[in-house]
Image 1 (cartoon, one colour):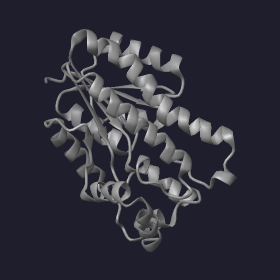
Image 2 (cartoon, one colour):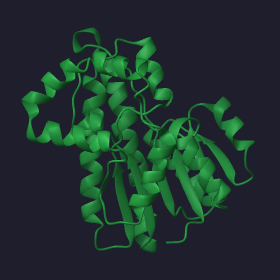
Image 3 (cartoon, rainbow, N blue to C red):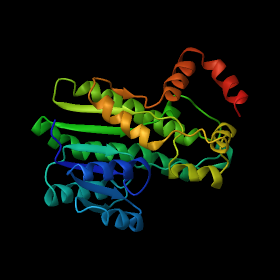
Length: 256
């Protein structure tokens, strides 16, 4: 399908930023959404095809207002790339309920807020692409990541079911499930009690290249895949966890 306008959340950094810059370079008008106004302003300077919108994804009213503003300023949204998320870590006993619930609001409820406000117009036009960033963390649990893994499990399932529910329309839904990727989310490794397996991946330089992840997303959009595993590491990890759930924890300990 022809894409004229795109909305990208988490656009101020990481894979959201990469996606925004690529689409803008292709002549697509990008609505870049994030809570980081400073980085958004820097992104806006890179292309006349980028408009910026500050928005807290966990605030349903704010998301509704933002989407309405995008429709007014830019027009119908042909593609949504929802990459906005946070990844604080810590043991369950060390996290209070407010911290855990806030993460769920941003990662999962933020996804619901975006989809709920974008989908009606796409259904009316019978056209559109919705790319949701889930994670293999939603299928492959790690200690000290309970809240994040739970939130991404919710995103994975929500997106997969959405894809099936719109299968008889011209709306394309895909859930992206990357492995550990070298993005600003990894800053939490230095700031919190990250799992040893992630610390080891960072120290050994084994994080996935975000540019390659975005490359694979574009390739998989041309197929009928519902779930995009951008790298072989992501695919192998999910298969091991699915078929050998108890061995998964032994493998995690071995690679820590």
